[in-house]
Image 1 (cartoon, helix red, strand yellow):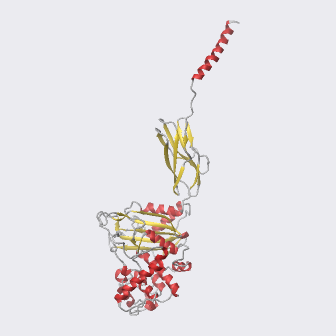
Image 2 (tube, helix red, strand yellow):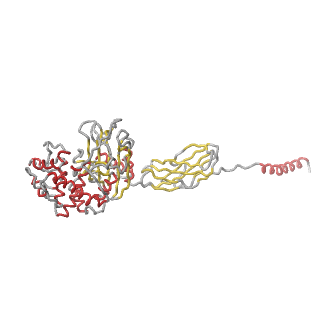
Image 3 (tube, rainbow, N blue to C red):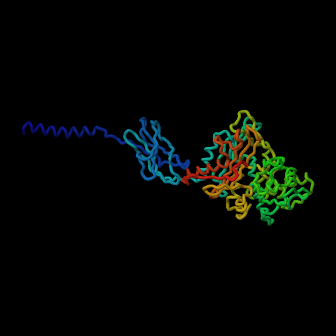
Length: 512
């Protein structure tokens, strides 16, 4: 064997022997172990967002990483090429939990999502979670109202019902402040407040039920049920029950100027004087909003139930007060589970009224007791109670107070309520307005119940008025009826409903 061949063989042997031995001494690269405990958990937050959470159980520590979520409507295994969130971190301990909000989602759409973790070596993904954004209109409605009402230093509470089931609610602010004798107390769904002219609907419920039992029609005259001792002025014998509830009786107040009266015209002696004054033929059938129209129910309903007037005003005043309250309680309020409703605040627990914006150090105003004017106004309810009452009686299959035909009679004939025309269909409502006096800075309250399409009912209370306009406490001058309706239409749009412009036409846009 020549030297050249020998050298070549030795070189090959050396490579085989020593090269193999050398490779055994080198540790091959180890893939980074990254794992997640499970697929992300999902919490739907609104019609446009969801909160996802994930837990990393294994990952490299001490180096920079990026975590987040990827999601898609069409890609069943979403990647970083799809929608994503991202956050940087350096892990020191495990497990590591993180969460992010997914925004820009579509209501009623299905999404695929998974968590990811990226290192210098690459990206690892968790398993996929599939979820559907399914937010009820009532939830979005509540979110919209809350966004408009919260953090504005007003006390408020609202409930939203579908049929006779409460679906959503919201509350905030204070019902009394540190400067008031009761100290600072929060406004809640169980805060009692004067509902003002929302009371007119309660009178209408009561009359509609009683009239059906007694065979009385809304077009019947009221004169047979007025106290016999009262003098009846011109055209009083022409006034019907419907005239009263529609504010077309011809009564224009003791000042003969169609300015809505409160206390002096709604106590027994004031009602008696209005009847004695009579009404002018030119005013009959003309709309003139007067509390006294419905205030007369406090006299008429006891008479329909059989009360015999004594002719003694003091006795008849007290008797009609007590009998009206008791009849409404037993035949309307008790039947929807609202016991012991009263025309004043619970003892020692008032809800005060304020101006918006609030003037620091100014004490609130307590509207007081309405026992001797109960009828057109005066009931005290909580937002929860009001929602239950108006939804159960007017927007649900429940017939314990009014059979379906009588609900229609009340709503279609505007008995104690108003209807508004909208491009979404008609809605029914009655708002309430109460204030300390008729000059700025105003302080008072605003309330409303509103029956919306698909038997959705909202009841909203606020214990403040715009200090300069005396209306609902907004900064843009929008009063309570369009305020609630706009919140509803916004919610419809956010929940995937109609996107076209929506119109609202109010026959009587003034506050009531």
